[in-house]
Length: 395
Ligand code: ATP
Ligand code: MG
Image (cartoon, rainbow, N blue to C red; front, side, top):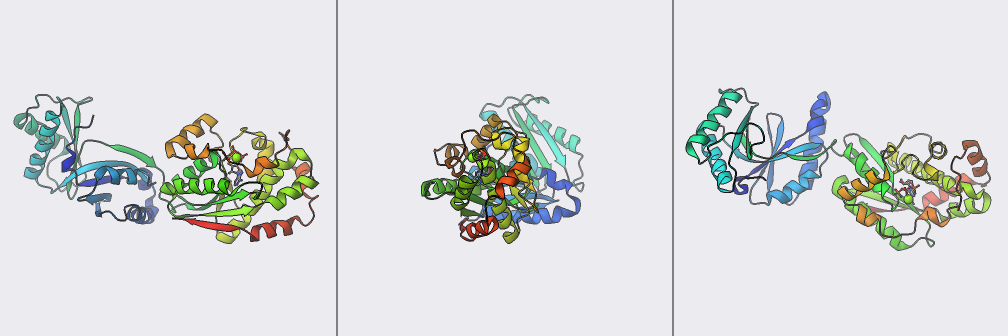
């Protein structure tokens, strides 16, 4: 139960966590974080301030909780404090803390604790001493009769910087690193559960994310594409602006289907997707490909399968953030980030159309390459398919 008088709140404090470890890069990270905050809160009345190397957002006439919800989705922040910002003045601090205490008592709190954190050594009183002084002030001037050090009904934090911030709750957020601070990646996005979660995870690690999806129109429908677009829109809450590339690989699938051994069809298709994604990464300077693969999940994701898929990419790393996760963990995360409901809507998958009944579970790379070579002019076909790509921008 939070007994804070929300009418008094006028500021949100941000904690960065990992950002503070980055030494020389800190300035750069902070710049990106600031610009992300400015974009995220576009249209709201707010002011971004730094107070002794911590960021604060002054808010007037706006819904504190709505803004908090938005800030929660920004990577690079580990915690938020909805705060009362006041001048650094003993009388004002005592007045305000009493107001907070009286309100909390009225709404049911029966014991409290005051914690003082003094980053500004210019403030003459020591943290411990000042916490006691404020505690005594509340005991004398409010109905409270009891201080409780462990698990108090209300913990009143007083943070002393250039200004003073009073807050009672720490809101935990995702952490991670600000978008764009660690590079640019291309997610191979299917309509399934896994690849949206993989997108979230790499965005959380600070990557600017774009997407590519492969379809087999007219064997797969326009509606299936709509679903993928909707997934990217949900993900844009986290990724910000992005782009979705769409490539029709039907021509390649027909070649694979008519010229190579049935049990290798899935792996060969997966290799084609990787090759096309790598072409796109050369064109658009993506520094990594990202997939939703998880070890052992399906036949194409055994170590043998992954070896064959991996070998089709030459110059960029393939990141597989879900590789060690169980399906149940992935599903839980998909629900948490809001992609699950969309992902489980039925759709035709471009791979399933030509999927073999009995896919090879442990393919050998040399066999796969032998089969792939049966497709004449394969590079030209890939090029042709690549050149017919389309794209959409997601705002
Ligand atoms: P997902 O739930 O992400 O579809 P999956 O468990 O169904 O994954 P596969 O279908 O084997 O696994 O695909 C493995 C990975 O290959 C996907 O996570 C995705 O990154 C990529 N992929 C598969 N199909 C497509 C597609 N049609 N377009 C783009 N990427 C794809
Ligand atoms: Mg899939």
